[in-house]
Image 1 (cartoon, rainbow, N blue to C red):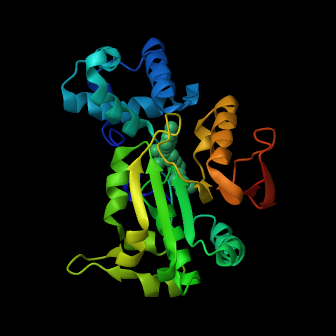
Image 2 (tube, rainbow, N blue to C red):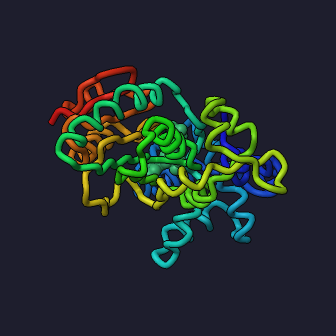
Amino acid sequence: MQNPLAEARPGDEDANAFRSGSPLLSQAQFEIFRELADRHAGIALPEYKRSMVHRRLAKRIKALGVADFSAYADLLVDAAADSEIEFFVNALTTNKTDFYREGHHFDHLATVALANLRKPLDRDGSRRLRFWSAGCSTGQEPYSIALTLLNTFSDLGRWDAKILATDIDTDVLEFGRKGIYPEEEVSHIPPAIRARYVNPMPGEKERFGVCREARSLVTFNPLNLHAAWPMKGKFDVVFCRNVIIYFDKPTQRTLFDRFASHMHDGGYLYIGHSETLYKVSERFEPVGQNIYQRVM
Ligand SMILES: C[S@@+](CC[C@H](N)C(=O)[O-])C[C@H]1O[C@@H](n2cnc3c(N)ncnc32)[C@H](O)[C@@H]1O
């Protein structure tokens, strides 16, 4: 399902109106936007996405009162317009997500990964557990990790557990931080878990809030996966699902090499259903359906 924020993507509903008053996006203009999306977000825009780019940028152009796509392209390449790049990238990201998307990943997290991770930690006394939802969109993925953790570790209070949730799109982060979702969204959460950790918002019809305990586990921060990573410590579990589909193979290879270097040996990596590490990274071995363990 498309998330609520993604449904309200700029321009989608106004495209026809805009198109009638302005020239269509030319090939040359599309090439400029393509190059900028690649340079600033590593997002590849194949030809078939041209109409999507048109739709999504149209409303922004209208809001700014800029004459047309050429003038908007000039604005973006102007060194003084860095802040506009953020709007541009936010408009071009695809944020589809769900709670408990690819539910088998959360079954594996609960029954295999967390069970294995707690063994050596129990032994050497360290109780530090670090999770990363890389490309977290509007928060359903990191909160699904949090709810799985709360539901699995009855002694979670004795652990130093933290979930980092990052995305390049600053709009989705703002949405995720609130932890409030429509009923349709929370219906994806398994009923027993939902009953325990998700509450109706007082005075807000059909809106539900993720409990404070779960929210306190998650920190949302902006991060472009192709830029420098400020994190120092290593991760036990990384979710990077349905993100690399937008990147080319060399970019994917570099990214997974960086993930491996930021993970403990034996740490778990979860990727999307249409993604693979085959011929992309030798630093992980498959241990389940789109689930890998770091081996070097
Ligand atoms: C389709 S959503 C996937 C959300 C979630 N991981 C899931 O599987 O449900 C992809 C997310 O990746 C983010 N993204 C795209 N390029 C990125 C980049 N260069 N750095 C960080 N996040 C990026 C997008 O903003 C979007 O929110």
